[in-house]
Length: 266
Image (cartoon, rainbow, N blue to C red; front, side):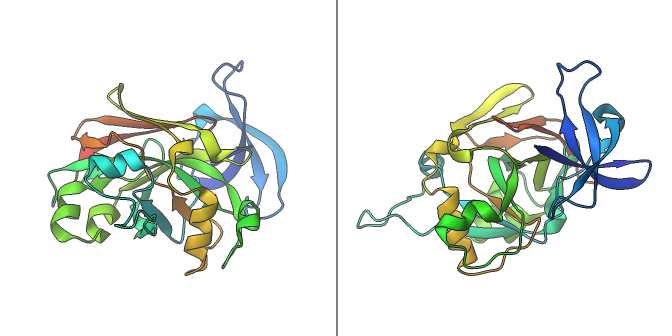
């Protein structure tokens, strides 16, 4: 099931996406009663997807992101994923604030304090219920579904400041969308990023160093996750620069495509 968050005539609602581009008349949204973080009913009131503005599929309290979760990406930035004894390093986690989140079609505003902004295509996990200290066998129970993400990063700032708050947390640095797919096996999905139609990144979630189960267990050992929170699971190799005027698209098998344009920050 694909659940989208959208606005129409000044009203914001959630709806189940039915059909696709090949469907006669195009896909439609069946508006749901309430929100998707509890049992809900479909209203039967349907609106063409083309008539609404898609919003970020959730408004997270926090976005918890994981770094260096694909070996080839870690290598391209000169980072190790094992210690001197050959043991896997602990996952690197960091936050992106809720104010970084934007939706499909929204603009990425190039920050004034950077001259090297990169794209990072990622699978995002959307949490469906409040959870803490989740055992591995119950991880699936706390997940609502999955969406596309772009962990936009001011690479020069990241390297210069040595900590990642400004480099990865600036406004518009966390595009999410276009919707949440609730019925998906995330273990081996294709991830692709294009810039102006040219492929930059291509990988599979099966190449993750640590699985989604590992990540959720690790994160919830330390903190409570709330409904709508998002976990970013890392990016494949091929990260590279974005410039003002570029159109960047993240496509994940079984979910769809998240597209955003880069503009000059006003």
